[in-house]
Length: 152
Image (cartoon, rainbow, N blue to C red; front, side):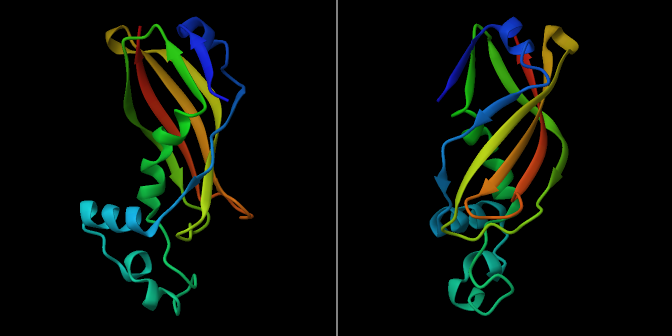
């Protein structure tokens, strides 16, 4: 269920808490192929289902950076903040891909709010730990400490 925070003061009160989990989302071969086209990374473990059957994962797997790029979409199903002008991606402090993400898998994100601190130009830096899990997996497929700049 989407949580709505009315302004930055309500959001600041979440520091040190778990904000929730996203909706489940299926990873398709079509989007893996489109990501390969966009990035030029056409390695066979991503785009060749026939060859991948005999590979280390038994099927094609999503690019790690595709998984990372889906984080905003997943997080937007967890919460939103009313009363801010904008939110910009500022960077990532740390990213790991502990397990492969087979095409056809369902994923969801889990969000922990780590900090919200004053930043330049009157904005705030929001740091969240986002853990992307695969349904039925024993390890996360991505763990990222994301940083956003929020402007009131």
